[in-house]
Amino acid sequence: MVRGDDAPGRVRQRRAAPAGADATSVRVRSGETLVSDGPFAETKDLVGGFVLVECRHLDEAIEVAARHPVARHGIVEVRPVWE
Image (cartoon, rainbow, N blue to C red; front, side, top):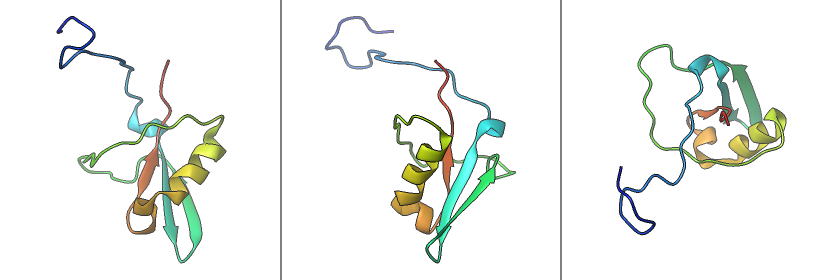
């Protein structure tokens, strides 16, 4: 680990990744929000990126995920962050 506040590669925050079983999959089709428990893919996962948002509860996180552009054509997985 690199030391120093301005050094490249400095770890600013870390958290344990939750298990895929804790995921909620969100997608929007024809204007309807579709929610399912658990991860969508039953094969190897591919993470195309992530967005970290703070929400008060799962329902609020689902609302945020449904507004993400990817939800209209793909799937957004909502996962809790362990503190």
